[in-house]
Length: 470
View 1: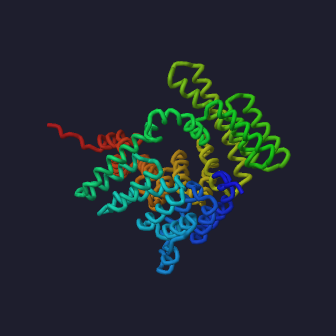
View 2 (view 1 turned 60 degrees about the horizontal axis):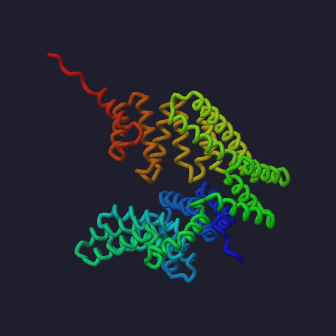
View 3 (view 1 turned 60 degrees about the vertical axis):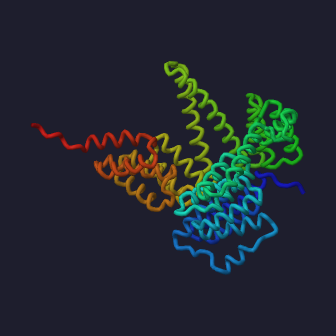
């Protein structure tokens, strides 16, 4: 049997991920973790749908008082497994039940690297790296492990960075300087493509093969490869007409770049929807239309930015933006009707309702979206903004405070947005000292964030006492 592609693996795992989301909402975090791991077993490199979602549940579980692994758990899960995927599952189970344990994170990283799940390994490596450099006594061994993990993943810049930190941790180790030279040389060879038998001529001869490999991985998509990909997708769909193969054919037609091929993609999907009444076909058709409108909007926006006085360009941009927003509103409204328990759809629909200033309609959508752990805090932030734009500043501030108190991470984009929006709400209520304090902390964290510098200057200037007259 042929090995499943990542998209086929994900399709096979979705039922477990969906079930995990459903039980997580009820607070049954242990069962949710098991469901996520069952899904990951089928799609080991499903980063967003699997590992990231599991991480969010793990953090919620530990905050609610979930128990860490006991001695028997450690013995059971620490025994080396022959199957690298099962080893990955065991290590992630331990980390999920003690998500602040750097040792478990390192075990998870080693297992992910050994299993060849590169996206997941890169994510875990970044997490371990940040934890190690933030530690009171950073571990030399951890930096060396990270160096090797990054090197195996082909990320030489991060591998060199990890080695630099290792050298700081152990400056007396003179062999590290030689290792840095070797790693830098390997990076240069990979970057210049001279590592094929160490010969420039060999590098030139291998260029065609490298370009073909890149095209197959969707990194470089020349017109020739698009034709080949389209032909292969059409043949596969004709032999085995499933939703997966037909949607891939539609994608290949849409990417061909002609109006005829794009219209054919829509026709195929809409015909299958009419034949089967499976909403997935209609949804994919709508997604292709939206993607095309987004491309047109980007082009129109660029034209306006290049020539701001061009009235026709501005009119075209405004019209296309209006069409895009209308299409997205209709699409996500239908998706919410078809998938009434899907938090993502309610979140996306709520955002579109916000954009047309239908705040009273957006708020219930965003309230429901909070039941999905993946969208909980983003939905709270957007819901708070709805109250803010309605002029309900006190209610908005309450929502932002609740989100800030519950949100585990203190310095990512969501955390900054929540604090900024709370400060705005306080400022509108005249609570300028509290607002200024929040703006100051934000500026210390990210000096270039939005207009926080100007707001600090404005509030400081406004709060200065008048100079005494002589």
